[in-house]
Length: 443
Image (cartoon, rainbow, N blue to C red; front, side, top):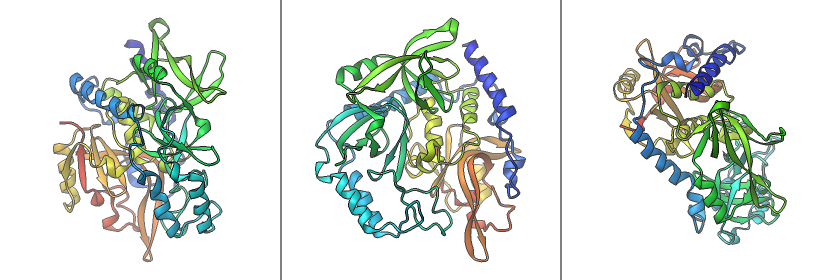
C-alpha cells in the first residue's frame, strides 16, 4: 500500500510539473488561466477520506461487472436489429461529406448496406474478446461521415461514423460478419457497432471461465503499452482497461496479468505480462479523495476525441473511464449518463441558483452536470464556487449574427461561467445557463 501511495504521489508531482505546461492561446478563456488545472488543489479535508464507503462501492462494482461481462452471457444480439439499421435509416437522407469535404453520394451508403449483410443479423452469435484498442463504427468502414464543415460544431472531428472505442480485454458478442469479412457487428457492454476483425479474437466458454476466475485489475495509468519480457508490443491500454491479475509480487511492486492475443487461427490465447502497481491495481480502486484526484489528473489536457476518435476521449468517455476505475458503470454517451443516479432538476434556474444547488446537494467526484450534448464532473470549489472537469470541444460564440466556436479542444477545469468574459458569447450559450440537471451517482 505504501509503495502504491508513493507511486501515486510521484506521478502526481510529475504531472504537476510537466503536464501543466502548454502554449497559451491568445484567446484562452479566463477560467483556464485563473483556475488551477491541478485536480489535487480542490481536495479539502483528509485526503484519505472515502467518497463511497466500502460496502456501497462493492455493491456498485458487482453491478459494474454484470454490465461489463454481459456480452459473454448473451445468446443473441442484445439491442435488436435497429442497432444495426439506424445509420442506414438516417444518414443516406442527410447532406453528409467525406474526408475530402465532398458530398457522400447515396451510392456510398448502398455499398455499405450491401457489405453489412443485414439479412445475416444474428446468424453467427459467437463470443469474442478485444485484443487491442479499436473503434466501433456505425458502418463497416473506417471512412468518416461528416456534416457541413462550414457549420460551427460540425466537420472534423465530428465523424458520425464513429460510435466509440473499445479496450483490450473487453468482452464482445458477435452478431455476424460483413460480406468482405473485414468487419464484425458486435455488442460491447455499452455500445453496438462494427469492429475491424483483426482487432478481435474468438473465445471459448472454457477460456471465458478461466479469464473470470482471476481477480480483476484496472489500469490506472493512461496510454500504457502492454509489453512482454522481450519488449514485444501487443496493445495500448487506456485508464479503465480491465485485465485479470494472476499474481502479485509485493517486493517488486508489480502484478502478473493476462492479456488476450489473436492467434493465426483467429482464436484467442492468453499471455502473461508484468505491470507495475503504479500502472494497474485490483479493481475497484478505493474511492478516496486522493485516488479520485489522482485518476482525474490523468485526463487533464488530453486532446478532444469525438467518439474516441484518434484513441482520445470526448466528454462522456472521460467520465465513463474515470468511474470505471472505482467500479461505477456508466453508459457511453452524455444523454444516457445524464439519466443515471439521482437527478436534481435545475432547468430554467438562474446560474447562481444552479451553483448553490450543486454546492448543497452535490458531492465532489460523485456528481455530474448535464446539459444538451455535454457532461461534466463536479470536483470541488474555488472561492465558494463549484468547478468541473470536462473534455470540452469549444464554447459557442456569436459574431455578426454568425454562430462559431472558441475551441478549447481538451480536458480542462472550469466554472459554470466558463467564457463569460468573451464579448462574442451570448448569455444563453454560457455553459452554466445550459445545464439542465445535476446527477448524484450515489446518496
